[in-house]
Structures are given as structure tokens and as C-alpha cells.
Length: 219
Image (cartoon, rainbow, N blue to C red; front, side, top):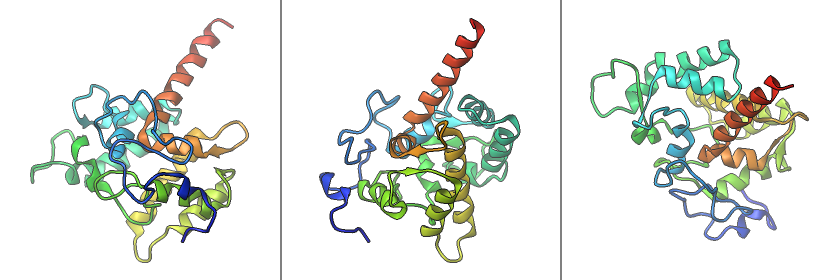
């Protein structure tokens, strides 16, 4: 339940899901420079891993994308295996009854991976609920995640009874996000989280790592 005086009322029609923009009280028009602005917010979130923009995410795409945003080699391999080789994500996102031979995840059907025990910011069609995004910060009582304890508190607040797959999916998602996107003070701010929802954060992380790598060559 939302408390009176909170930010959700600053967003016009906060209960109306947004198909293409990850909006909040500070960004009523969402992010600028989206890679494919006609994708749903959830498709935008995953599009970073579609390396050749063919609408399919292969295991190697997932591995390379994870490395580009700063995940270690073992963690990137583990995430790739969890996402593709458990067969759940490739099977649920395809149009055929037959599994894709290369275990590709089909971006157009990424909304089928929607699960419970999460914040509810995405709906079943991959759209974003601004009100649910604002509720994240009401649960925390702050506009940032400052420690792993905050991550655990957010997970506990959204946990559904008897939903181990949802618990796992949420723990992996928020754990990886906090691990790669927190700043040098250990803080993950609300703007980084908002940009995670529409995927623009991943491009920024990858570009930042490339810039630092290039600068180090000339030191």
C-alpha cells in the first residue's frame, strides 16, 4: 500500500502501464536515445544482449553481454548456463513446440518470462507500471539500495508463498544488478534501477568500461 504524500502522485496516470517508456516522477518522458524505441520496456531491457539485432539472444550473446557490463568470467558462464541450458527461457519464448537448436531466446516473446515474487514493475505484456516502480523506494524508505541488506529486504517484501522459481529469478536479477551497477560507495541509486528496466543502463556500463580500458592504455 502506498503512503500519502509519496511520489507516485507526481506521475501522470501512475496506474496506467507504459508500453515504451520507463517513466517515473523525475523522468515523465522516460529515457532518451533508446536503441529500438518501439520495443516494450521489457524488450528494451533485454535488447542489449541481442548483439546483431535479429530478435534472438543466443548463449554466446548472453556471455559477451555479461562480460561487457563487468561480470566475471565464472559468473557470466553461470548466468548463461542458468538462462539457456536449463531450457526454460528458450522454450517459453519460442513460437514452435520444438526447442530452438541453438537455445535462442526470442525477444518478441520475452514477456512470457514474467514471474511472481518481484516488484511488479513489469506487467504480463512487458509494459512498465510507474506506480510499482515508486513502491520500490517506499519499501526501502530511501531512493537507493545502500547494501546487500537492502537487496535482501526488497526481495523479502516481494516474496510470494510457494514460489521458489520466482524467488530464484528475483534474487539473481537484483543480486546481479547490485553487483555490477553500484557505485564506489556501494550505492545503487533509483536512476540506475530505472535505466535497468529499459536497458539503457547496460549500454552505459559497457561504454564506461570501454572508455576506462582505452584510457588505461595511455597512462
